[in-house]
Image 1: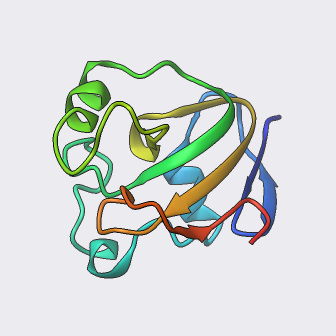
Image 2 (image 1 turned 180 degrees about the horizontal axis):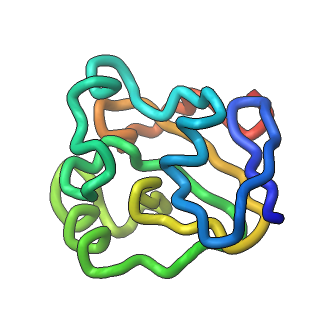
Amino acid sequence: MPKVTAQGKTFECPQGANLRQVLLQNGIELYNGATSTLNCHGLGTCGTCAVQVEGAVSEPEWRERTRRSLPPHSLAQNRRLACQTQVLGDVKVTKFDGAWGQGNQTVWTPKG
């Protein structure tokens, strides 16, 4: 089973599991500020669950590429929408500031 490391925690999940669901089920603070309640709940339309992911994950599909191509996101940023990402192997996740996780300041890293 793949291992996910985020916010100082490491836990296992089934291969192919949805990254957003795995993070939330394990008590990871995925959203910044008010977006913890004001989000699309995994539909891939709001972009507030953007994270940097290192490791084996699914390739971005059209919905994610489209949302990340719209401001305040940029396809040039190394970010993924957790709700549109499947865990295929061990991964490390980092969250950045900004309502959409689009900022440059780190909120949390895999180590904490």
